[in-house]
Structures are given as structure tokens and as C-alpha cells.
Amino acid sequence: MTLQTLPTTPFSGQRPGTSGLRKKVAVFQQAHYLENFVQALFDVLHGTDQPATGLTLVLGGDGRFHNRTAVQTILRMAAARGYARVLVGQGGILSTPAVSAVIRRHGASGGIVLSASHNPGGPEGDFGIKYNSANGGPAPEKLTEAIYARTQTLQHIATSDCADLALDTLGLQKLEATDVEVIDPVADHAALMRELFDFDAIRALFARGFRLRFDAMWAVGGPYAKAIIEGELGAPAGTVVHAEPLEDFGGLHPDPNPAYADDLIDHLMGPDAPDMGAATDGDADRNMVLGRGFLVSPSDSLAVLAANATKVPGYRAGLAGVARSMPTSTAVDRVAKSLGIPCFETPTGWKFFGNLLDAGQVTLCGEESYGTGSSHVREKDGLWAVLFWLNLVAVTGESVEVLVRQLWREHGRCVYSRHDYDGIATEQAHTLMAELRAQLPTLAGTTVAGQRIAWADDFAYTDPVDGSLSQQQGVRVVLQDSSRMVFRLSGTGTEGATLRVYLERHEPDTSRHDLPAQQALAPLIGLAQALARITHHTGMHTPTVIT
Image (cartoon, rainbow, N blue to C red; front, side, top):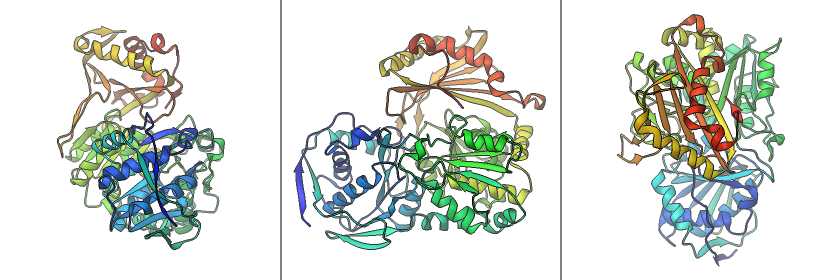
């Protein structure tokens, strides 16, 4: 084995988005593309050419195509950088919440997550990389911007010429002077779940014949769900389906929402439906929960968990506060008000919850994009959310649907939907948003498409912990009846731009709680088209995806 210093030249476009650097696999397969980003990361973390003496790095990914190759590359570079120890998941596998758990439980200096989350996999699919800091959470913007700046000035990379390590064999191996420990990817996360939830109550629930269908979507959540739900909690074999992580996710889109989890929805809406359905995404940080014949929105899911948190062992002492991303519905705000606890509204991106969690200001947090989590890690956690729901069903004796309807009766229903317009030419998308922003100073008090606008702004967030300012986080338009629309461009795709339009209307009348969401939101949908001139700018008459 020999340490090597190799010349390189910068690549354009290596600025991380809201969830790291994501590109097509073919882009990452270019010589030195991954190496440049990792070298820039190490240079920013440790100072140019300074060793990572005495530090521990966690490494793993969701198992998608190119994962194993990337793991070997990063191991060589970590050894060249002088890391004392690298903890890598067996087979190169670690779910995103598990990476956070391992960092925190082992006192690591940080971790590298290899995933493009819910984006498609395979040779023609997507790949991604992001760094999580010592608190277990995604790197803050200040760090990711410094990494990007460094990628533009790189002249060399440091690595080793050693052979590939045996990733499938548990135990300690040596790479240069670095100890590489291949760990059970499930163990630390499972231990954490046992500390939070009443496994005996959930075990008794399954013993009484409760039926769950958990769809792992051929992704990394499968091994975790099999080990805990079937292995420890006694659910019948076959409860967890599509459980083997495949490099191409079985050719499917591993995104747990009504557009892509159609198999799960068909089972839960069928004549022999189980009591509950659940799914996790590509890297197992997102979740979807369903009752028999009943869909649960992510916003309602967060609100139900907050309203009932003290029924679960890990949260019996109560919640310090809650937080939601700005586009997420205001259902949890209403719960927080009734509980007398603060509710924080942040930009989209889990990293914005990190400071609040570290400061002890919030306990639960969530996003409308099927992400929910708590102070136990610094990532959203799909399996955690499913276990929380199972624990509530077990101790209350109520069904998923009843728990949601209890929320609606007490706080009203926040009727909610997201309309995605995918694959828009980037220039056109930015023109649409610029035109919207130009209207903001004159919108208040006007009537558009029959709807009276109370106020409108471009959301900006000042972090209450460190004072950092994040601007242009999404255009908000709020009507006199408190209905609202949000327009923002997504930062998680790899091709073109995605316009997301979020629509919400509060409905206190219980006789209208079963009105289909798109029908209840029809006036807002018309207003969104009129305000943003979506068809004019994109040529699209209908959304690509409605959730």
C-alpha cells in the first residue's frame, strides 16, 4: 500500500443543494469527480493538507448503483487523510438516520452519506453524497458553501493505492494506518428504537392479530424493518415486503407518496386490507403511513405524533417544542398552541432543524415531503415514525384513522396538497419565480381569480440560535380566510427544475372533513395558476405529481 498525491482539475457545478450533491450516476463516474468533492470536504474540515489525526468517520449509503465503488474510493481517501478510524456499514449499507445514530453513539467527528434519497437508482439513475457533522445532522450552509468554493480551486487529491476492502465481513481491517471497522448497519439504530418505544406493547399488538404491511420499496429500510418489526416485535414473516436493497430499487421510484407507492395503497384500499400500511424511501429517512382505507398526510402525521407524544416512553416528559418546514401545513401549529409549547417555522431542509434540536428548543419536527423526526437523531427517520404510530395504536387501542379524525375534531382539518411541476427548463423556472416576486409589493388587499389576498412575502428565516439569515426560501400568499399558497423551486432533483406549489385551507366544519382535497382546494388551484402563470412559463397544463 502506498499513499498517492494525484493532480486534478476542478469540475463546475459541485455546489451542494438542500440535501448534498446529487447528479446522475454517469457524472459521478467521471474520473476524479467524487474524489474532488471528498478532497474539498476534507480540506475544509481539517485545513488544506492537514491530517484528521485521532478522528472517527462514519461511512455508508443506501445501496444504490455505484454505492460500493464510492465507499471504496472514500475509504482510501480517508486513510490518506489520516483518520484514526472509519466505521462503515456492512456491504457499504447505512440508512441516513442510522448514520446519524452511529455518529452520535460513537462520538464520531462526522459521517458521509451516499444517497440520492427518493430519486431513482440504477446505472441511468441518480447518485449523491452529503456530509453530516458531529451532531449527526446535515452540514450547515456555511460549510457546504465552503466545500463548493474549495472544489473550484483544487489542484490535487490524496488517496491510497490499496486493494478493495472486504465490505461484507464484519470486524476490523487495516487500511494504511487507519482502522476500518465494518459494523452491523442495524444494531445502533435498533438500540435507539428500544430506548424510545414500548416494544412490549407493540409486540402484544401483533400477538393480538394486528396486521401491518410495510413496503421498503427495494431500498435500505428493508433490513432495518425486517430486523425490528419481524425479528423483535413478532410481526408475521412477510409483513415487510420489497425488503432487499437493490441497486436500481427494482426499477421503481423509491418515494413513499401516493404517486409512487401505488402497490401499498392498492393493498390498503382493497377488500382484505391490513390494519395499517407504511413505507420508507431510498435511504429510509422518509415515511408514509396509512390506515385501512385511509391516507394520512405527512402534515397530519406530525400533528398526531405531537398531540399524543406523552403516550410514548421516549417522550413521556413532554415536548420542548415542535418545528416544521415553512411549506408544511399549520396543523402542528394548532397542536402546539393547545399544548402551550413553541412551534418554529423553518426553510425546507432538515439541516435547519439541527440548531433548534441541539439547543433543546424542539423535540419533534417534520416536513410535508414525508419526513418526520425528533431529537433522537439529527435526520428525519422513516422507521422511527412507523414505530411511533404502532406504539400509539398499541396503547390507545384506536385505529390510524380514528387518531387522525380525533386531531381534526379538536383542531379542524388542514386540507392540504402539493402540486409538482417537474423537468422545467431552469431559466423558465427562475423567470416564473422572478415574476412572482415582482408582484409581492402590490398583492396585499387585491382580489385575484375571485380570492382576496391578505398578504404575501418571500420567506426569510433568521435562525433563533445562531442568528444566521436564509433568504428567498419560498413565496407565500395568504388569503383573508387564512388559506395559503407557497411557491418554491426544489433543490433535490438532478435534471432541470421542479416547481412546487403548496396549497392549504383550514376546515373546522366536521361535515366537510371528507371532502376530497383537490375539490376543497379548487379555488386555490385556480389562483395559483393565475398568479404564477404556470402554463405560460412552463407549457404544462397540469402538475406532474399531486400529493
